[in-house]
Image (spheres, one colour):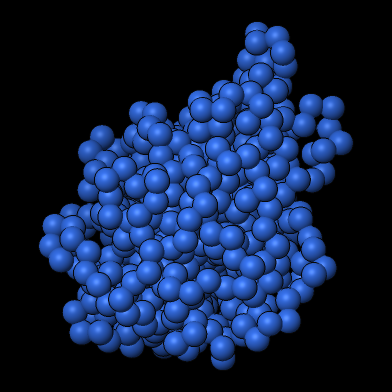
Length: 501
């Protein structure tokens, strides 16, 4: 996993020596019982590993040779528990499309917290592991395709250097799940710095009150922000840290054209990682209004709206912390509001920094925001491909795209070149920065669908494996990756994604 300098994970020196490498040292289970329900995963009839992340396993201190086997399949399906596992389903709430709902892990079980050889702590969770007290009438299971999608996209995000949960394995269950039709069932093993969400705080505030929020805030600070313990107002500092980490995260999404698709408060992790890959997708043609989710009819979670929704979610987080920020409600609101009002400027700073790197620009010039917006406006006008436009921009011979034939682009290009020549970096150095920050390859929707359809209909994972090998080196441009750089045909113009529950 990537190291995030904003997070200093709690460390333990007790490294396990069992043959599979499990080294659980569980802390969440020590919180009050209102935060979770203890129960085992529901067993399945037949488990088979179809995808296994051996490099992640080694990072976690696990033994791939032991786990990429029937023994591993039994664990990743929930049929057997790893040594020292303490399985539980987490309670949380959330604002879904703006409306508050009582939720919880309706189809997921946290097995425990793995301590890596480096002393870092990660949740190991089974997704699709059967009904829990929070299932609300659901079957607690998951279909194969959505679990494979999460595996592909979360790994792609990792290699794009964007904080994210990751996937350790996907197993088939030998059972079907009923959605619109019968679909093959599967379980994904998710690895996360933690599964503490804004929605976890909302549930604590709603059901347990101030004391539960205090316990959860102290736990979150100890686990993710230990430096804040010495602050005069730790909960206000926690809010500020969340504002900064989430602004940084969403700015990274914007810089690669990623659209989360379901930015509910229960899908905002306090660790600062991207979590929950339901109706997510990557934008091809640039348009801020782009929406892929079939249920987002109003565009609430469109590409261009993601920063605003992030701030909205952070406001819900702030509301849970108010009694801990100050006993005087008016004073607490004033302090929290000042922090929340800093979000646009912080986001703009992260976004501007990322976009300047994409354009090979260093230093600070007051015209930089206008220069960036000028290019984006032209890209929107011509529905230019977001990824390829930035990747191709410094080529000596630009591709034969409508954008590059526009006289307005020629004017913009001249201004941009003057900006590059005015800085201390050489043109070659600027181009090198661009190549390091503009991926040649993203998980394009038509290539992802191709891999998923082949896996589901034919049981053939070779297409997915080839895609994954290219996505693991997104900034390399070579003959192997050229096939994956091509935008989709017109048949994908109305492409939609689904939550996959």
